Length: 280
Image 1 (cartoon, rainbow, N blue to C red):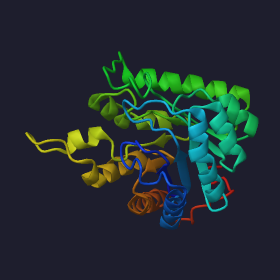
Image 2 (image 1 turned 90 degrees about the vertical axis):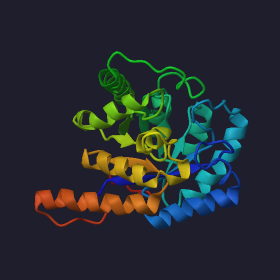
Image 3 (image 1 turned 30 degrees about the vertical axis):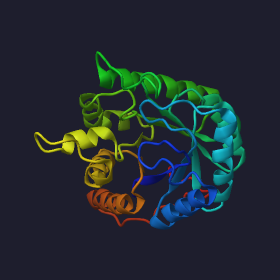
Image 4 (image 1 turned 180 degrees about the vertical axis):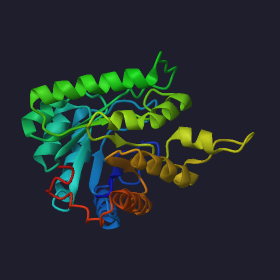
């Protein structure tokens, strides 16, 4: 089976990549369905930006942005909700979401109560502070230990589907991000499904810039986004979180074919994410 592709749907005015484009309900649903048509296995709906420096959003406003969109998309695709607020998570899960994408790695009890999947992501600090001066003694060891601890707590609480995400760009320097990308086989080796999101992030613009030139503009980071997604998938991650769904699905199909070639088999069709559980 090919790696899964999670499409990003920011129902926000201030997300780093496409803030404001899908704040309107009709635009959000249309984009979500467009990603489904392009092959997204999961659509990740978020109503509060987690970009560096982002300010928190009031709970009532986040609920207003997120819940109707989740409800509209849930009959068509597996929906995840990207939130750190228990009330928003509960409402979105009630509206049809089945995966909680939790950058705070703190809401496993909410996932357990709803029998939903849960993604534990590593972040140093908060979105407002995380990029001010991130420091680690051993970024790989510290991130891996944190994720193992949170995954164990969630499993003990009754969460049956636990994912881990190293949190590329969330309280990390360029060097930290590269170290975590190199170490993805270590995370995959835990046996837990790994989710990775590098799409359009600023470190790609820094790395891809020619010597003496400004970082690559956000709108020109698709090649680097695809390269890092392919790297992650070849390292064994189970799902990548992206803005450019159609191009990434093509890469995922190719990675899936190469995995099957190594096993001497024929590639199966990926299971539908709408109501089924393709990771099992």
